[in-house]
Structures are given as C-alpha cells and as structure tokens.
Image (cartoon, rainbow, N blue to C red; front, top):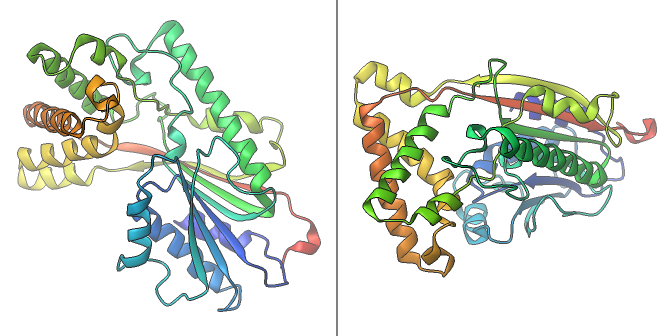
Length: 333
C-alpha cells in the first residue's frame, strides 16, 4: 500500500480534468481490490477536484465470477464508491495477456498476485502439480513460459499506460535462498491427492493432469526485461522483496491449537488452488457441479488431517514492482 500511495503521488495527471483511469489487472471476486483501489482514490482526491471523474476497470478472465464482483462493488460496506459519486466502476472479461484497454489510456495500473498465473501450462509435471517441484526439461519449459508471459504482460501494460502513468505489480516471490514458504503445504497437498487416487476417488490419469499454471519469480526474473535500463518505455522505480509472516502460525504458537492452524491453512489452499486442480477431473470438465463439490471436500479433509499431524508455518515472500511510463514534461502537474 505505501508503494501504491507513493506511485499515485508521482503519476502525471492532465490539467484538463478529463476522467482518470485506474486498471485493476486480475480482480478475481473484487473483495481484495477494495482497499488498494480505495487508497488510490483517496490519494488522487488530494490532487484533483472532488468532481473529477475516476473510472475503475476490474479486469479478469471471462470465466471469472463477475456477479460477485458487481455485488461487492454495489453493496460491500467497504466499497470504495461510498461518498464518491464521481467514481465509476466497470469490469472487463478478458485475459490480461491480451489488450484490455486502449493505448495511452490508463493512468494507474494495479495487479496483486494475478500475474503469478501463466497464460498456458507448457507441460505436465511428473509426480507433482506445482512447477517449483519440476526438474530438467519440464522445469525449463515452465521457466521459458514464465519469461515470455512476463514480457507479454509488461508490453501490453506499456501500451495501455499513459505517459506519466504508473503500474504496481505485487507477486508471490522466491527468496534469495530459493525458498518460497509454501513448499510444505504443497507437498502435503500432493500426498493428499495421492491418497484420493488410492481410495479410487480420482483416477491416475486425472491426477497426472493436475498442474497449477503458476510460476514464482525471483527479483532477477522481474528485472530481466529492464536490463538496458528500460523496457518499451517503462522504467523501474522500485523493486523490493518483502516477507509475510504467517499470522495463523503466530496464533498457534500462543494457543497450541493444531486443528485451528490446519483449518486455516487448508482453507487457504482450497480457496486459491483447488479449483485449478479440479479442472483436471473428467466429471468436472463435463459440468458436474457435484463432482467439484465432492473433490473439494475430500481434498480439504485429507489435507487438513495431514496438516494437523505436521504443523508448519507458511511464512512467504512477495515482490513489489513499481514501473513508470516516461512522461512529457508539460503533462506533469
């Protein structure tokens, strides 16, 4: 949030009072966008008139639950449009690996965690479902795909940003020691999925198709396109690795409640990763909602049981990247 607030203070704003455009790249259900977009609006209001229009585009894939997005934007008590009659929320159902807005139209871009997802899954992963567990030629395919997607993402945003605009990207990251903090829960989940195969709940072929199309990047990966000082008119203003302590683990250290810890960690995994894993199931592909519910419930219970037997902290890391598009001197005020 401090990076976002600082970027808003530095971005160029036209004097004519035209609408200011904010793009939320990867909005998901919208709830997690409220605080950052709200801060951006508050910071902008310190620089512009209270009646200057602000347009907010929430962007995600067509399969995203946009009903939830609009419900959040219209009725959540923390919605950013409260007391802001000149703020206009919109939504776009398109992958951010495509053009989603016109060239030179976005003043401020925000993307939190979404760019960790790849545009495509380049290979299956023998014995696991996370790219970090892959090796050899398979790992090389994921590394190449991640590098290509990152340059594509930046190129598209470079086109969409106005001169003087700013883009803030927040991503789960790998620390300098090569650790991400999620290794234990991913390995426990992998073992839980194997248990479902043994029980006959899913088939070996379905298990083999399960891959998370994600890729954790190091700081050097994020900065590689900027090796010559800029990339397609974008320059780096900040790139910082931050650690995120596991609040659930801190509570466990106080109360020793292993079940509460396992429940929180299993719910975290279920919410973020299970839908992608379930897409490998034949019945789910055929639109069987009950099959999705059954798999989700079974995997959650198996994972929770394993986590109760093996309490572990999920301390993780994020990388915050702030980039600017070069502005003409007369545009800045």
